[in-house]
Amino acid sequence: MYSGHRERHAAGLIQHVAAAFPNVYGKVMLGMSVGAEEAAGIGELADLLTSANSWKQAGFYSDFDPDSGEWSSPSSVTAAEFAKIRSLISGYVTETQRQLDEFTRYRRAGQARARP
Image (cartoon, rainbow, N blue to C red; front, side, top):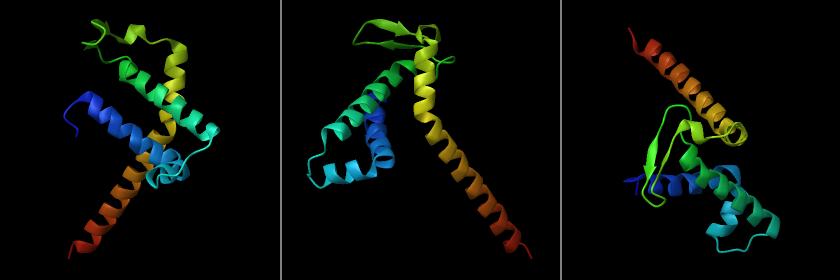
């Protein structure tokens, strides 16, 4: 499943939809229809995340796209595109940092109790 970039991005989109739109994700998983506004929101998110593949690691990463035959590079990302993707992932980054902080506090507390 995670053997290539496209597979990871597809799985990441599903994970992000589940986290960001749990009600919509639940409806889809149960085979229920979603409203036009919900579908448009998911469509916009999918478009942003698809574009993120070419923007990834802006400032550090270059890659060749065999479908287009072109190279992507940090210089191809505009300030507006960078701001848009940054706002999209800021919640994820904040939550990931919170979880890491919580884990390390829990781990330190457990290690302190385990010592004689």
